[in-house]
Length: 118
Image 1: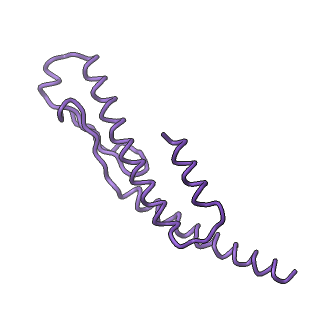
Image 2 (image 1 turned 90 degrees about the vertical axis):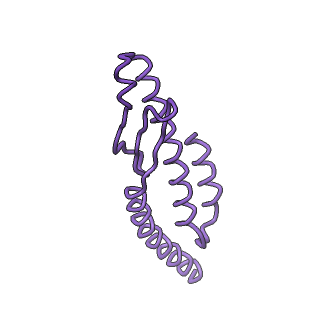
C-alpha cells in the first residue's frame, strides 16, 4: 500500500514539473517566429509558434495585377507553409519538454498526436 502512495507522490511531482514545462513551452512558442512564402516570395506570412499570424506581406507588383483569385491562392499557400513550420517548432519543443520524463505511454501518445495534427 505504501508503495502505491510513493508512486502517486512521484506522479504528482512529475505532473507539477510538466505544468511548469508546459508554461515554458508556451512562452517559447509565443516568442518563436516562422515564415511561409508563396509565389517565389510575392507573398509571405509570419506566424508565431502558436500559429497566430503576426505579419502578412504582399509584393506591390502582385497588387498591381489586381488578380484577387491569384492573391487569395498565394496567401492561402503562404499561410499553410507557415503553419507547417509551426508544427515542426511545436514538435521539437514538446520533445525537449518531455526528454528525461519517465511517463509510461507518453512518447507513443505524442507520436499519435503528431500524426493526427497532419
